[in-house]
Length: 367
Image 1 (cartoon, rainbow, N blue to C red):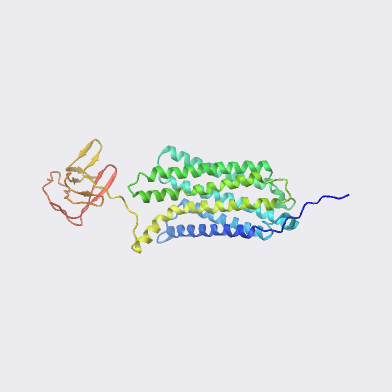
Image 2: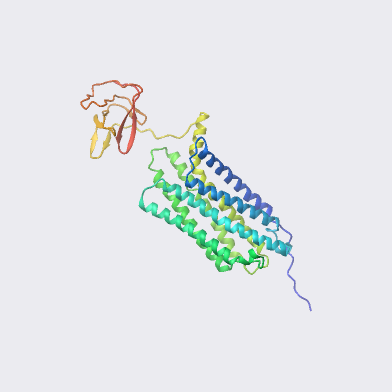
């Protein structure tokens, strides 16, 4: 009587390729994070809550990658047929560390972006949405860690090899994906409304919006993650081989979200660096103004009190006005100043407030 045996799979190992891809993204994340922190501590210390949050995420990413690398050394990425029982047990232990630190990376990076956006909006609706995202991320991390510790106790104690049931894996993954998508879309949409109203060039505003929306690239990694989770066979004896692609996309997502959280804050330092080399940088859009309005009044050649109570001369329509100066004249403190004065001290400045903007008035003279 003959028995049918399963064919022996080829002795393949996808771990080197996967590890090279993961390390490449990690290197970029470390570079971007290092530049961000450097600009925060030099020339003066200016670390804020969002910087500390992304630093925690970066530290957890390093720990997670360490666990991942050690699991690969024990055989992760190969078929189970070529992995010993002792190595399989160690892989499960280290993968538990990968899961528990990886979810912290994703959550804290997104919380860092949300905390940063809180500094740029006072609208109640947006602030409620941002705080809801922060609270949901914190609750998910706490809940996930508790479930992992409870269900994977056998792995930690050395009496079991698997801990997460199919239902728990699907539930936790879908909840995480839902929170990630909601967080990324809110953090991408809010800058569009804030940045586009600024008096900056279209190219600069577009660049900032694109950088802030780069967190959507991390959301895109959720597609392959869900695909490999759905096709994963929980009853298969070759589970390490089937698990390798999903682990790869999870590690890529963690690096991308860290890069997305740091990239927008590098615009200023990069711009200053370009300026030192004499290269063109971004600047405010120069607009030609011939009248300044405030409230229900429109002034076209007259005096209007500034914030200090002084009288600032508003040039008439035939006097050229720019965002960086007014070629005209300024009458200070004199409530009866006439428009017949024709010169302005070259170094003197006055401010005219209108339409919510402040103009530095000075420069040369014009008759």
